[in-house]
Amino acid sequence: MRMAKLKHTALHWREDGAADGPVVVFANSLGTDLRLWDAVVDRLPKHLRLIRFDKRGHGLSACPPGPYSIDDLAADTLELLDHAAVAQCTFVGLSIGGMIAQALAAQAPERITALVLSNTAARMGDPAMWQQRIDAINAGGIQALSDAVMERWFAPGFLASQAHLPWRHMLERTPRAGYIGCCQALAGADLTATTQQLSQPTLGIAGSLDGASPPALVEATIDLIADSRFTLIEDTGHLPCVEAPDAFAGALTDFLKELGHV
Image (spheres, helix red, strand yellow):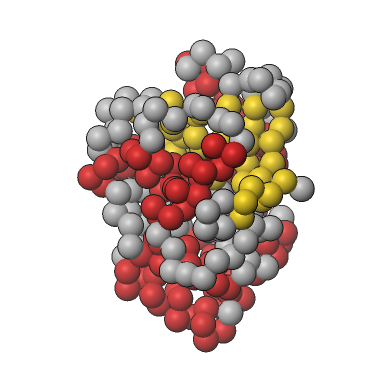
């Protein structure tokens, strides 16, 4: 197990593939850990250097006291890139991971050469919505939200097959303080002004049945970026990398080919 001891926290991280290959870094969603990307990593070319991590308050990473901000999470990620000796990378972020990606690309454009923004937006929800979620967790734990979250995360067929159960367990095992801290980060984040200044080549990905970040919301954010394109993965919800890893890995591989990394 690899732990990076950073200024304000410690992050659990992992790398796969070739140590000297083009670097692709993955940032996962609220309530998940780095295993979110298992099926995608298994399907990518082996010459890439693939780095994943648990953001603060999630997985095996430390859980410092909240509240957090997107800038805090981006600063953690930049420190992790330094720790892993990553000078430049393609950055793949899903949901809050996509907001971390946008913030990082704005703050350190020389480090982030291309972006994949999956099931995310420049602004996700509003402060009142996130406060309602925080209040519900404080009253009944993350378990109180599990049913509703699963319906946003996954398509009906995936739910009916019971394939969602490991992800439900992952959600419910997320430290309450870490989940709430990231909800507070989302409540305070509107990246529209900085995202529309981004110049990195960008691929946007959405799930056609996503109840957390509907395709129109994702596409509107991708349209803010000049050098961007958008793809829709049919019959998937908020985590297409889980429901349709072949399609997700295929779209990512095609994008990396365009960048000259494959």
